[in-house]
Image (cartoon, rainbow, N blue to C red; front, side, top):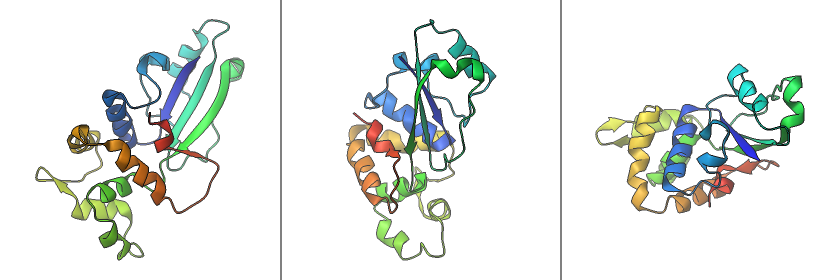
Length: 177
């Protein structure tokens, strides 16, 4: 079984790479199609070609990670038989809520959330190493490197508990060892 990990956003991808680097992401690079996660919402020509190259009896489990993954995954007809399953992992609330929680600013944000989105709040109030949050992979890597010596699983657990909606989707925390 191979895993195709599709990630919606660049900040989410950066976080997954950090979790992989720390060895706490449940899916290893060796088990992934192309040895890495992909920042894509759909199976493109490149990924379809990789799936076609698998042994006849080998299947692919697709993992979709993002906050808005309600769109249907389009699978080329000739590879449908190679797909074992598709599982969605939700990053709601937004990635920026993870930053707000990491900075212990949840109470401050709660007072403003009716007028300010988490991304706007994070860009305004979260600064690390004299750099304001700018939702780029480089900033995310720089910021979460500080968590390498702390228990990032505890932060992700709190993030999971923060959720304010009920769905049948799995959550990012469910992908952590």
